[in-house]
Length: 141
Image 1 (cartoon, helix red, strand yellow):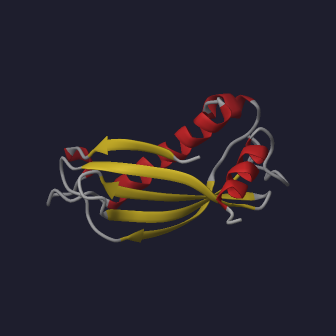
Image 2 (image 1 turned 180 degrees about the vertical axis):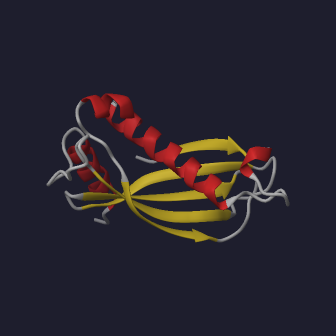
């Protein structure tokens, strides 16, 4: 499963030169991960929190390849690229809707913690089975 959505670049997303500020990409990618999890589980982050499941980012490897600009329409794509029981890695990209040119690509690793910030030994259900399934769907035959 791949979650895809479009986002218009607004003035608040840019610096003084009309170029997208680097932090805006992180915000859009978070939106993609949140919506991916909601689409996959049917649960919002608030509902997961009510089940004592929080999903903080533990690392981000991001490559800035080009700059989006004011009023561009960007496409944010999110999918699971790796799952090992303890962590899940989201592969994300931000591209130009008009040209398909990649602005940013990233691997974002998340973990699951309790509300008291204690790490789960394994990512709990319903996320574990979904992350497992999504990772297997991408493996070559």
